[in-house]
Length: 300
Image (cartoon, rainbow, N blue to C red; front, top):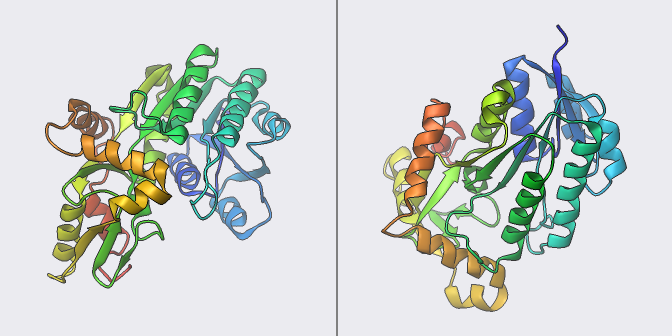
């Protein structure tokens, strides 16, 4: 029998790349990887793994219609950030999301798996790039295409990035050190997306929070010390006043994270961690992620 075709948007990014890898490992699907630059090194790497690579631009619905033709399912996501993560465009994100949704409907897609944002305690946050994702979720619910919406915690993969640096024993984060943060790895996102496509009748028109660990900045420092033979690590939060003055959107995110990250914790967090473990036994804790990705060998 011919394998169902799954089209993966943003295939050269962390999320999309993890989805491509997991789908290919399953051997259950014909995988089409979408990228704006189908001839670059990252795209060639996807081709060598076994994916077909096609041009696709989330801001260009015509390119999505061409890519979605005859496909069974689509993995969709939106990206509102500039490359340096200093600017955000919710207008562009809404356009990307609506292009995906409309192209799925017009192409007869039978399953859209879409990743959004963890929305626990997010009633009227005033955070534009979070609320734009919630608006896109509503657009998906109101449509006719069967869907799965995965609501994502903070990416473990952000650790060590310029906006979450670890250098000379200092971890710089954007929340107070005692506040716990919900986490998920890109690899596990790929696994959950693949499970949704494999067992689609159980995942049609459902929404699920993806959290596999809940760890504070101070606990992160302790984990790094533990896996590096007692080497000293210290977590330091960005000054609140500076964020309030120069990064107002991140400041609002900080307030929300610190509210959810201190007792009494929202019960949805513990429920989400249990649900994730029940559906995918091998999902990673933050400690497992750190070891798997070489943070016990000086990768900072």
